[in-house]
Structures are given as structure tokens and as C-alpha cells.
Image 1: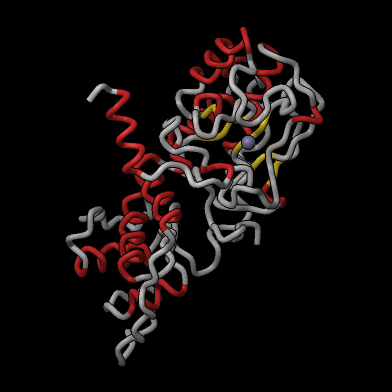
Image 2: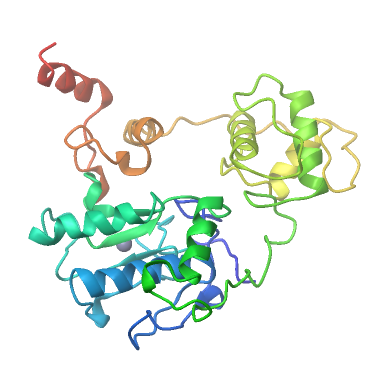
Length: 321
Ligand SMILES: [Zn+2]
């Protein structure tokens, strides 16, 4: 099994399945002899191309300070855990420090712009600032990401001569047995879409295309179903979600619907105020409330941050309202 649940997550923050080292490609960064394990396929091509350009055009790499894959991470759904991100010369660009690229910053920005929005730079974030960090922006299966990898293999920017790039690398193991998630295809996905359209026509993502391809809208519908069913909301259909769907007559894998009513789940317990504050901000502004300096305080390092009402009051005051 090379796609695994890590620290409670099946996919990392950017939508790539969590993996172990069997999914890494250790071919060298092009133009160098430095071997680095990066997620097979498009991430390996795109992220190594980015490292090669930073090395060639901006700042020579210090190979002891470049990393991609982590087995575990202080951020449980980190994109390092799915090997779809890398850090570059980390002692020169410490976490949470601003301006570490100095006069070279415009060169970094130009390289990032060349990657068509597919390469995200942590130096554009404000909370947390992460100037060592680069990652794939789109989830696994994004057509533009695959196209960029193909273009790089065909000689884009002269990083690889055509035919010299590492293999495209299809994942060595498909979706974990029995799980449906972004990227899954087939009859079970189609049954899920047909069943959810019929039973839950008022969900926000409805109607779903009944095409048997599990994309972001299907994931959103599954997440809403999980939230409203009081089961773990991750947008992935595993055994618990399947069983719960079956109680609504949405049966995916040939088993018949249950003949007795489901057990009533335990009463919902509200999370702490701090946890709700964090979730509100993340729902509004994304993980770690990226892009909202000041408003969110310093939650990333464990302290509470401001409550929404305080932050909104600040916002009004700053805007002269
Ligand atoms: Zn990083």
C-alpha cells in the first residue's frame, strides 16, 4: 500500500493522496547530481524543474537544506506528507521571516509566474509566511498540471532535453481498496452520484454530473453528507460513510440496504470556543487563514488568535468605518 492514511488524513491540503516512500522518484534534479525523492509523475517533473531554475537563476541550492517528503509533519495534512511540496535552502529562508530573498525576490516571482499558477510560493502567504516553501497548487488529476509536466518533458525551458526526463510514472497502486475519493472512477462513483442526486437534491453541490468520475463537486456533496450525518467529514467515502449512505438506500458495492434503522449517533458535543474560532476562520479564508495578517493573531503557533467579532471590529476601524 503506497497510498496511506497519515496523521488522520488520506489527502494533503492541496488534494494529493498521502503516500509512503514507494511513491517517490529519486532521479536527480536536472543539471545536477543531487538525488531527491519527489512524488512520482507530474510533481516530480514540475517540482524538480522549479528547483533546477531556482538553482540556475536565483540562488545555488544547498543540498543539505532541500527537502520534499516527510513521513510525519507538525502540520498533519502538510503537502510535504504527500511529497507534493519542497523547501529550498531553509536556513536562508526561515519560517515566518519576511524578505529573506532580498533583491532576488523578483526573480523568484518571475519563475513562479512561468509555472502558470501551478506552483505556489509560501512567500506569498502572510499567515504563516513561509519563504522556503513551494508546492503544487492544484489537486491530483488537474489537467493543467499534467500538461505542464508534459511540456517540461518535451523540453520546455531547456531543463530536460526531449526524451531525457524521468518517466511520467503512473501511481503504482490505485485508490486504497474500497475507498472512493477525488480521482476515483467507475460504477460505484456513478451509483453514488445518482443516489445523492435523488436523495439529497438540496445539497449545495447538486446536481452532480452522473459521469462516474469523482471530482470536487462529488467530494463537496460527500462532505456535506458527512457533516450533516455527524461522521468524520473528509470528502472520502470509506466504510463508515458507505454504511451510512446505505441507510438512505444509496448502496454502492452490491450489498443490500440494511433492514433495520441505524443506531442514533451520540449527542453532538460543541467544540471549544477556540476550536470553533479556528474552524470559522479556516472555512472563511482557507487553511491557517492564509492571507489575513493580523486578523487571525498567531494561531499557527498555538495561541488563540482573535475572535471573529474582535477581528471584524479591527477591520472596520482600520477601514475608517
Ligand atoms: Zn515547506
